Every structure is written in structure tokens, then in C-alpha cells.
Image (cartoon, rainbow, N blue to C red; front, side, top):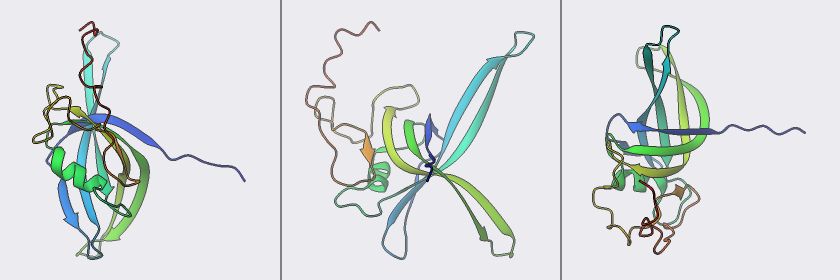
Length: 159
């Protein structure tokens, strides 16, 4: 039997604060829109730009302790730059007017907080530099993993 792969990797900025809900089954879910922009030059040399909006959904489902939706609720806000990894999913539903609606979304499995609008690292209430846990978080559960000193060794960076 052959295998297949459904994997999406994006780096972009949040268009709005994440919307956090809890399902009737008690699972917390975070929904947010992530903007990615591509740039190119036209044949005449004029710079062009196009922004795409991606609907993202992250669940706490099946986690012990802090889940992905909890982390997004606590640390992520409008304008933040995020690395998002997940899978592409399609679904349909019927709205209140009995019209069939189709939705394409990224089911988020991992995130990496890259900073705010200016690329900074202010995570609005997260522990300060040096004591902040690593920002990559999978949906497999558990707490953040801390890498002591990893954030303090930037003396050799050329920028």
C-alpha cells in the first residue's frame, strides 16, 4: 500500500486575535486567520504583492496539562508572526438558510512563536528572556520543554 502526505507549513501574521471556544464535549479550540504575502516583479519591473488568508484551527484534544489552544490563547495576538505546521482539511456544513458552505482550513499540529509585527519577541505576559520556555509546541501534550541558555547566546550573531 502506498503512503501519502498531507502537510502544510506556513509563516505569517495573525489578522485578528485568536477566537477561543470550548466544544460541548469540553475540548478547547483556537481559530485564527494567518496572512502570508508573496512578492514578485512584473515583466515591466514593477513590484507586485499578494496576500493570502489561511483559516487555522488548533485543538487541546487529547492533551494532559497545557494544550495547543491554551498556548495560543495565552501567548498569541493580532499581528504576531507565527510558524504553523499542520494538515489541510476540507469540510462542509449547512448554514441556517439551508445553504451548503465549504470550508478549507489548516488543522494545526505545531506552532512556533516568531515575534510580533516588528519581529520582536514580546509575548505579552510570557516569562522574560532566558527563563522563557521554548516556544515550539506540538499537539502531543505535556508542558513546554525548556532549553536553558539557548536564548542568551546571541553574541556571535552578525546582525
